[in-house]
Length: 297
Ligand code: G1P
Image 1: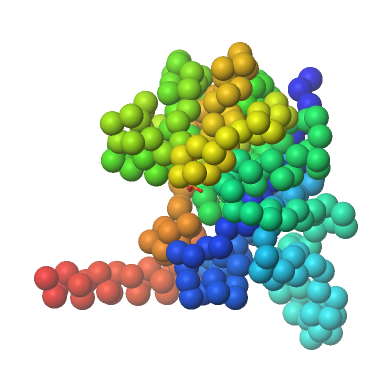
Image 2: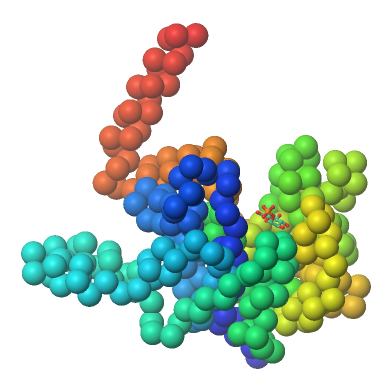
């Protein structure tokens, strides 16, 4: 039996400058997708995959995020008194078990690899997940759960992977594929944000990882890479050089890049259309404005 993956790291120290001025006082992870903060989607996905310990790597100005995960007895009492059971249930579903969440500060913005490394003492010597909340994945079986199931068969390190248009590959970590087995590919190398002519493929890393503690050891020695930052991709690639397996997992689902405004808007529409209470009004409105737009052309 493989050791179960029960810990996940959520790197959330970024300044979210793409969403200024909103992110001047609100952490990006708290911004709402329909009616839930972005980070709640990642938490729910992690829980579905069996994660029990949630490690947030934060930075200055993220205290609203910590408050969000606190229980809210006053609000709960008020809702109970007013008989608003449905809202009470919604609220309770966000409550986390005592001691399940830890916060670590990343004191300097030295890159994703460094953010993950900051959590090393809380991980110890067991496999762990990394989830980037900006990557929101709509899926019947939540993405990390799919990966945990695949990982139980393969072991090694595993990254979520998705084909992107070749001209977009340089915005991602990109896989150099050794063997393509369909939903799983074995990897012979990984490059972070390659120059367009140097991309080994258009199979990009998406922000879900299952990693071995050896990657944290690699990060102990990691020098800065692409963009002058300490890259998680480089630390995983080093594991391949050390003879350990790395797999890309083509997940079933739709990924939204909520680190960009266009992606955030698309996710908002998609998640709203998936909701019984919003679908009719929204789709009517969307078809109206599309018709008006067509008529104007
Ligand atoms: C990070 C990773 C990159 C990955 C991407 C997925 O990049 O470094 O390898 O492809 O997330 O969203 P970032 O988007 O933070 O620049």
